[in-house]
Length: 224
Length: 307
Image 1 (tube, rainbow over the protein chains, first blue to last red):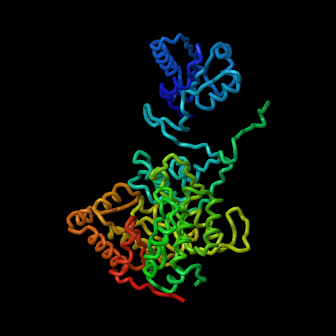
Image 2 (cartoon, rainbow over the protein chains, first blue to last red; image 1 turned 45 degrees about the horizontal axis):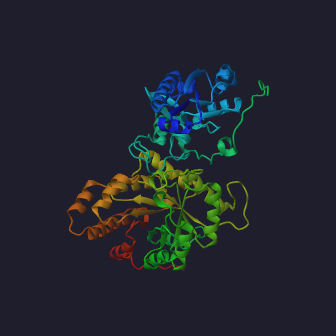
């Protein structure tokens, strides 16, 4: 899923500015709900905080909230079209995809981002998420024991570790596991170490962002 | 034996035990600084590495600094890291370096940019060190670029790789050395050695695999002038192994600089006698002026001449 982190209140307040009377905060019910950053609960908490802040400042404002299933689908965005139109500003607590999709549907509205979109990750503990994929567009997990060297090695090395890892930790930070040690251990356990002897060619990054912004069309269903 | 690409390769082919050292380019555009450092090394070394923005700190380009040092009469080894340049930039630099008469290259991944003063910079790592070695090999020996384009005048390079005898996990590090050799590495410069037992064990494994017969191995020596420097290397430098006994020895001594020189000479004497070690690579970070003294006192002066 996409993992997000809510921006600090100070940054949000600065971004909102002063030229408004009514604000709609829109949460997203999918990924960022799971990463406890932009779901119904977070929307309510942020609304309360902002009401308190502006109340103390003596600014007369109204703050409404809603959380839709996904902000990356017009189908759900359209459910709250009237609400969006009825407010001066919209603060989206979706990932960057959701914010832009809202903008596309409501081009005349100012839609602001309330989250930082962090990465694609998994829940590794309660309240902890970790990156597992960068969305490079060409999955190579089959060759690395199911551990991605592109996402999990700080240098995305394909032919083995750098010389900087020690005790299974990355040279960048002790809190980061050396991706290559993980690959090695996994392949060792599976008795498949010979996979690592194979020379890996330079990766073709055209399937990543280096080929320009990406688009995918499934001809079977495409109706555009 | 293949025709040597450089004077350094020629000396190694002739069977000489070689001495390489290192020159760190300035943070600034001071050409005289490079030339002055270079002049002090003339006659004492068979090759001088010029680091490529080491520890991810912006410095004068390795190739440009190497060019100026070469003008003073040194044989140069440029360094190329994959951290800052993609395949287009790296191959372009190899062509440029060879055109300037710089015919040795050490291919490296490079320290992560989080080590330096620009942790917010975007890393590149389009290639890894193995892929870079292969790319340079194919450029030099096949006359072909990574994109398949052939060149009428290919570059000439003696190709080197780094190895860390102290990196974890051991088997995986060894496998990477093998991959570097397969890709076309002809010489290896090791991480700085303080833990001789571990290095001897590594060399044993190197000999078992015949690595020493396929590449010239130069043992890394880093003379330390203070106990502070040693401690810093132990804790802050990626992939270093500094035994506590050595730190104690430096703590107890009266003259740390003299002790640092002695330690370096002792390590040189030990590694010289290890089968398969074909030279040393001195890396006196921030203490480059000590290089001639260490080389003289280690009995490695004067350096051999080859025709």
